[in-house]
Image (tube, rainbow, N blue to C red):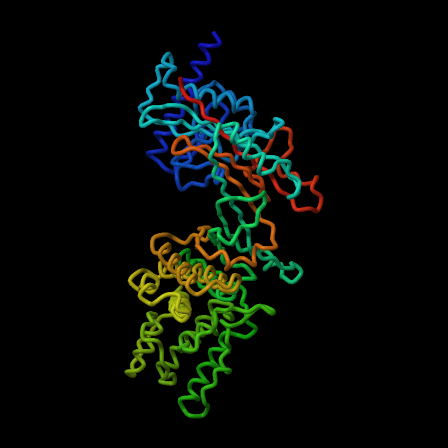
Length: 592
């Protein structure tokens, strides 16, 4: 009777996985489904991989977690042993956690039996090849097992065996308190896999993070992200000892994730200017005018009046041009901070107008008055000025008309003034960014045609300026923080350009840059790695097996064991650096 029930469970689990796999192939964004009380998610290539570096992912795979429904009164609807879709329940009432180890082993057993072509009494059609299965486990056993995995092995289209994975994690421990050496790891691998020829590869990750005293920040600024996620990965062959420092022969890869808005960013001030520009764009989209708090101390109207008077006096010969008379808003800095993104020396009238307005305007009425002053001066011939030829705003059109002595009347009702100011800001900031990348010789203008295009609508031009700013955050901060060589910055700029030509703004995207190990040597020589890993492997092709030992500053998975303990309980480490030891081992079983 028990044997028959087990066969039914195997068939039902296999049928469920097959359904999830087929639906996942048709819809790459399909959400998780539930099997009894467990959540099953198909992870496709390109999705976040919680097993990264601990298992060689090759295509899609399943992950199983435990699903908990907070309102127990509804449990009867889905605890009848039938598969159901998680969307049947309100998402806010669902939570996930690791499975009990006994349940994880049961599901791995179901999966293994379903993949064995010699279990003919199950009458399973293996025409569709299911992806591997991984189950997240409660670390309740002595070894602290956190993952169990099963990976089918194939000889062509035929199932020949299965590779069973076990991942354990212990910690926190101090970095010098681990109980195994490299020699013992190699010997364990040899005995487990009957191997003679071993390949031993090392990996280390060092993070470059910023820190600052919160006492020096205002309450508003303290809410801004203070860290830049920049880290360097080093890989090398022939590890000599545990926690070996990467040798000069190792390869180095920088990974860069830069969210805009850090107070310590070298381009913090341009970001504030961009945020004002985005608020104007948002106003045009939703029709609600909400002016941000003015950053300047003077009235925008007074500054525009002074700008117009100074230009008229210049024309009349009453005053010589003096750049110090123009308030240099875009070069403002906070405290002792500096920006490597310098003020351009070729600002035209409209750009000077933008600089005087964006930090100081406090209301819609004040903006209308500023533009009224400019338009009246144009109509009365009191403003004779130059603008960049490629300027594309309505106000630039009026200035060009003034060259011929006739300026049309423009309505300043509704959101027209906001659109006029946005157009000026888009032209100005686009020119700022282009001038930076071209002036630093990180790119040529033709490479940046996509960002300079005026054939798209105004909102899309704003979106492309956001992309330019994110590129600036990445490139300029690398120049400021890591002092990358010019050729590296050219490569990085081109990577950013190529990515943003094809993709929307994504400040979480990780840009990668190969660099010389010697270039970042000073950053890691006296530092602790966030991850240090040794990988011992043997065999060839599908018979290749690995043992991975890893020391990391964070656990490889976020678990919530039933007893309330967690892997990241750090009390036992005191004030010492805390680390977690992860061990990934596998064994291969041939189907007989």
